[in-house]
Every structure is written in C-alpha cells, then in structure tokens.
Image 1: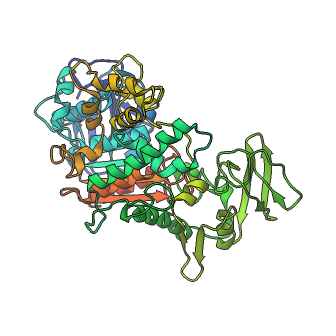
Image 2: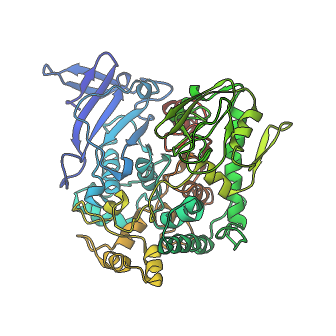
Image 3: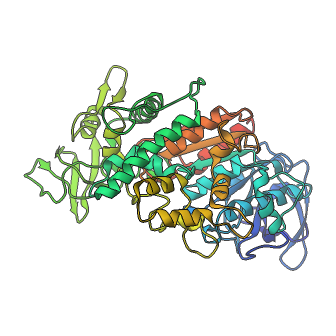
Length: 559
C-alpha cells in the first residue's frame, strides 16, 4: 500500500506491473495493473513519486464504497491472442467516474497453447481475492468483458469458475491456491467459442452460400452440416420454456427443419423486428454508429447484383463482388444475381470491390424493398411494424455468407488461429475437431491421418486436445448432457451481444450459449440480443458499448 502512483488530472491511484503468480511462464505478460478512483483513498506522498494509501471507509463514488465497488476486468484477446501487460498509465475516466475498480491483467495468447490464456486470467482473479483485504473493490463482484476471442475467453472465465481441470496449469505457474477463481458477471460480444462443434455449425447454417467447391469438398461440407444435426439432437438443449430443441430432415437443405431450426429463425426475426422498433425513418444508413450501437452499423446486405456486371443506365445498377451493403460501412454487391432500383436520395460510388452505398431510406417499406431486391424473403406488416422471413437460407444468402475456408476453425491445413490455440506452445497449428476427423476418415480423405495424429498428442502436462477443448467449451460445463456439468461455478450474471450479420461464426454459437445459461440452475440473469445489420463488432442496439456495459454492471449490483 506504499507503492501507489497518482494521476491528479483524473484523480486516480494506480499500480502497474504486479505479478499475480509465483512462477510465471512468461513474466512479460503475467502481471496486472489496478486503477482506483482517487476518492477511495487517503494518500500521502513518499517523495519518490509514489504514495502510501489507506482506504477511506466513508468515501463514496456513484453509491459505491471502496469495499463494495465492483471490479471490472477487460479481456482484449482477438483471435485468442495475448493481452499485453500495461506498462504505463492509461485514462479510464468513464469507469472511474462510475466508481468501479479497473484491473487489467496481461495474459499469454494462442501461441502458448490452450488453456494458457484462461489459466492466466484465473490466476489474476485468485490474486485479487488473495489481496482483497487491502485492495479496493469487492473481489466477490468481479466482472469480465471482451469481444471476439476476448468475448470467448470472457465466456470461459464466466463458465469455468473453480473447474478442477485447470488446477495443474494454475499450479504450474504458482497461482494462489485455496481461493475461488469464479467471477460474478461475464460480458461477451461476438464470442468465438464452443469450438467443439463450431466447424459443423458453420456449415449447417452458412454452407449453402459456398461456391466453387470440388466434389470432395462439397461432400465434406454436407457431412459436417448433417453432423451438426446429430450434435444438436444429442445435446438436449432447451428453450426458455424447458422444451428440448431438435433438428429434423427437410426437403430442402440439410436438416433445415424442426424446433431448433424454428428457434433460430425466431431469433433472426426478433433481431430484425428490434431494428424496426429502434429505428426512426427516414433512416440515414451513413449515420449509423457501427461498433458502438445504433441501427445498421458496419454491415448490410450481401448478394445484390452479380459479379462483374456493369452499371446500367441512370436508375439501375448492378454490383460486383463485395462485402457489405446497405446499413452502414460496406459495399453493395457480393455473389448473386439481381439489381436494385436506385433512389434519388441514395448516392453510389463504384469501387474495385463493388458499389458503396450511402444514403437515406425514406420509409420502412423502402428498407424492406432493399432487403427483397433479390427476391422476396421478408414480409412486412405495416400495422404492427413487424416482419417475418422465409427462413435461414435466404437470410444467410443476403447477410451472412461464408468468409472462412472449409473447416472454418479447424482448417484442413491447420492454418487457422484456433489451430494454433490447440497446438503445443511452439506456434504451430494442430487439429482438434474430432467430429471433422471422423468425417474425413469415413470419406477416405487425405487429411484424415493428420487429424488422427494430432488428436492423439498430449501437451506438457499430459492433456489431450479433446481434454483441452473441453476446458475451452462453455457448454461442457453448462449442459446436463455434458460430463463437465456441475463441476464449475458459473457467473451469476451474463450479457451477450452479437452482430447478426457477422460471417466469423454461426449464429448458433451465441444462441446455444444463451440457452444453456438460461436453463442453468444458479445463473440469475442472461441478457442476450443479436443486433441487426452489425457484423463482428461490439454490437449494441443503441448507445455506447462501454456505457451499456457499466449500466449493466450497476443493474447486476442492484443499482
């Protein structure tokens, strides 16, 4: 308590470079920094730039005291990369004014192999409990938050609290023992997780948008989509009313029927109807705030216009290959046929990748017409201001085409970041998807032996890829059908947001996580929403992601 530094402009006391484990695997990462609202301390200068501080028990910031303030921990690990330890002061005004204690813990990344990242974060959380008597903030009220790979690790920290599977890894780095590593809340934007079935989910939902596959590749894609149906039907996942959701064979597509299919369609329609509810028309797509909320955002329509078609006349144009479209930052184009009648209030600019659209929809009907430019798949009821859709195929064709190669996460050549994550600490990729491995064996594919070899390997502590994958799969701990059910202490409060237009993962990833949490005894709240038109960002229906996160923390704390 004699080593606090002070930033007078922000009225913040802070310490940087605190080691949270005794025998770190990489001391350049495994340190944490603590930022405390200045009012919580009474400090005196030591004459060397540091301060000796005592907690002021009477101080209050935003209704919190030094003992009751929640602790928030960011997990900024895109693609499961490392989170660098802080080496200097950073301004965190919004968190400090809210009375929160902010802890930034560095952690190892995918190059170190799973479960290194989550192990480090757990060690940091244990350290906070170990020092709870002197460090401001309530160590029983820790909230983690992150996006993408960071959202995944935030979900993992939230789902795996006190799991004994992590104990050998925590012991190896000298983490504090005898205290809990569980957290109180987990905020997850677009979490890339549940990797045990993510490849199959990707093909089931989005494989229909693939083109140019060889006969062998198409057979793999189709088999993965069918395997996802078997996975879902054995999962026992339930809706909010406790009904088990399943998939059924269908005349069109691969298992595009059944109660689970209908539930996913309902989530898509709910997202669209929330957008219609949130949005005032005329709607200026170029004014959408994108990453931090607001209708539209960085996303939009795909597949309007055909590749390499020329603009035709003054009133109609056709797109070239592109990645986005109406609804913010993106291009109007992509694979597909059709055209769109240009409105007077919508400008267009031809680019090498398509046509960038920026303009205003005068009415809801204009917007719905744009959605239906390639054929009617959205039906709008003006009286209720609600819409319905024809189903998943038309949705993904318009909004959510594939952007990853076959084996979206466990790529055939082991070239994805997730392959490195399940490697062995040497920076090389390794296979981990046992479902895909079985498919490749059944098809006699040349890659089958590579998968089999990798799945038999063990890491330095003797754990196989399957065991480490369980540790990195929230559903392993949350569903009664899984062996890990009941072996952890999940967070009580959850907030999950995802951009529905992202092509980084199947929508089923976040939906399954939310459903599992809603049905888990001991979880008190699950705030889940998909955001229409937004992609792989900190998606919010409105407002700032930071402000919304802080408000959610306050709600969980009963404020």
